[in-house]
Amino acid sequence: MPDCIIDTGPIVAFFDSSDKYSNPFRDYLKTFSGKLYTTLSVVTEASYLLEDIKPAQLDFIEWIIEGAIEIADINGSDFELIHKYMTKYRDMPMDFADATLVILANKLKINRIITLDTDFDVYKTIGGKNFNNLIHHLINHKR
Image 1 (cartoon, one colour):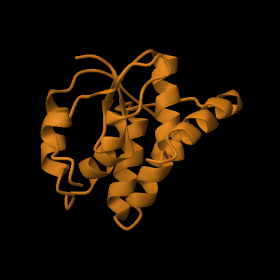
Image 2 (tube, rainbow, N blue to C red):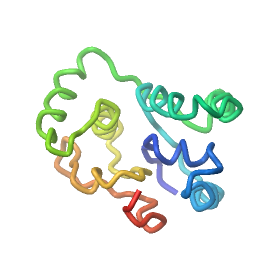
Image 3 (cartoon, rainbow, N blue to C red):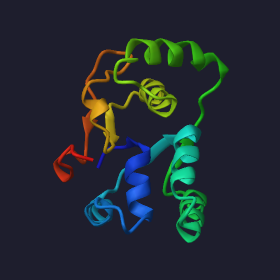
Image 4 (tube, rainbow, N blue to C red):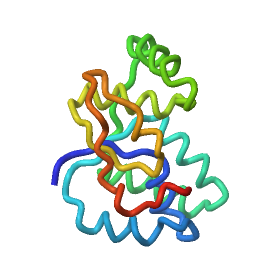
């Protein structure tokens, strides 16, 4: 299976058993064999959303430590493009975490993503490619 980028929603679903996408996403990950990449802003967002479920928040951090997901660097030189994308998609609106994932897609030359957000149906990579949501079939876009 190819490597891909992972967004906040599926991470939260994986660790929060009360999330309606928890079981379908857990089942999906059992068969996934590629490498998962994300950004520190997604880790921060997911940690915040898991804050009320302390064991889940700690399990998420342990998951990262174990190498289940790789945190890719976003640095100061990326902020010009982050600003450009947040401006371009301000009507969505594109949040900071989503913008970092678009930048990451360019850095890794990957347009495959695991997300619950319909926004990625509209976003394009820097090279103009559409994102291919690998779990599109699991969700009904009525989050």
